[in-house]
Amino acid sequence: MPDTLRFSVPGKPEYVGTIRMAVSCLANTVGFDIDAIEDIKVAVSEACTNVVCHSGGLTQLFEVYCEVGEDRLTVSVIDKGSGYDVSQYKQPCLNTPKEGGLGLFIIKALMDEVDIVSEVGSGTRIRMIKYTR
Image (cartoon, rainbow, N blue to C red):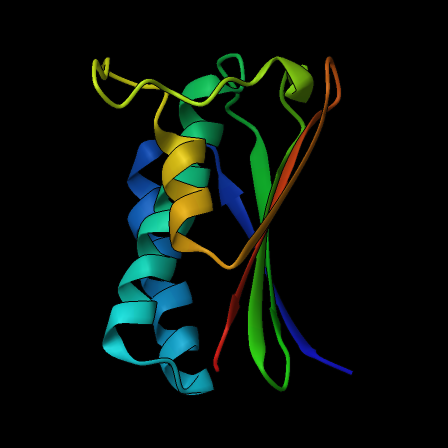
């Protein structure tokens, strides 16, 4: 059974860095190399920033769950915000990037597996897995 750490985080931008550093320390403990740790840090930052910026003015807590498995680190970022229709997500045009809209693209590029579940009016869960290989 994997070890699980859980953080309840105020939906404020100043706490994104705190979660980023905590997950970085955990990834180091698991045995990831510096490049993988940087990828994990960026992906977790993007997921947390999405909560802070896109959850409809959310000021309540959101949750970050970290599961340490034998060959992986799984990080889930869960909010109770406004949610969205995942089927409407379109990959951004990288030839003409605009400000914003790249967060999910970046997360998917940096992590080995990404699963997004969202329901309008109920919130969103982004589950990210990185394997130690």
